[in-house]
Image (cartoon, rainbow, N blue to C red; front, side):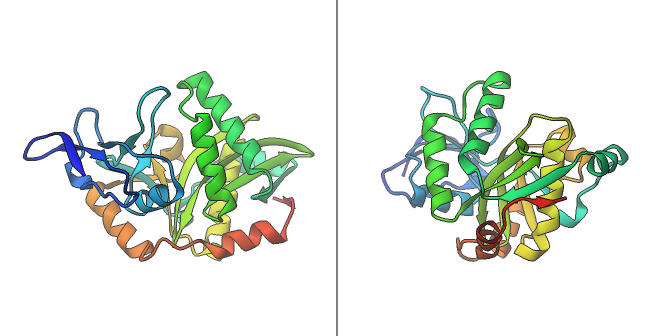
Length: 247
């Protein structure tokens, strides 16, 4: 690895062709906050390696790939999920059902369309292809929320060990993404998922029970929850065995 710029405290790392380059997260830049590395590719090996160390890619075409490790990490312990009165009412009256890994590509397409409307097209075709490959290999997963036969919400992310890295969610009906997160938190104990990485805080996530961890705390959690970057076979099995289930 070589550094494009650095001082005693911070550095921006230029990734080489090796998928196992590992920047020091504690030297991430302060401006822009959390930027750690640039370059490399979206190969399966690199994505899994860098995710296991707490990095995630976020960039817009035609910019180079940018890798981030924020100083504060928004996370959710599944048992801490908070369902508001309005969400409980929506759950009773919404005729909801859910599925796991039944329509991954449609979920990521919906997330891309929503992000394009709000933030620009950072879920590019390259991102879609990379995460779809992770899905085929059993590392990336989708949670789908249905009303009757319509897919109305959900999210996708990467599961390794006892940790789930949430990537993006969408909602085509009120509360649908909240329902998706509640369903997943309910499944978490079965899947032995102890922590959900939400990446960057929002009022929406904090209202659902998410909390910020310092970078040091998050790195400690990674060491504890991902001793090796193994697949979550229980989550894979749920997706293989079931179709839609009522909520």
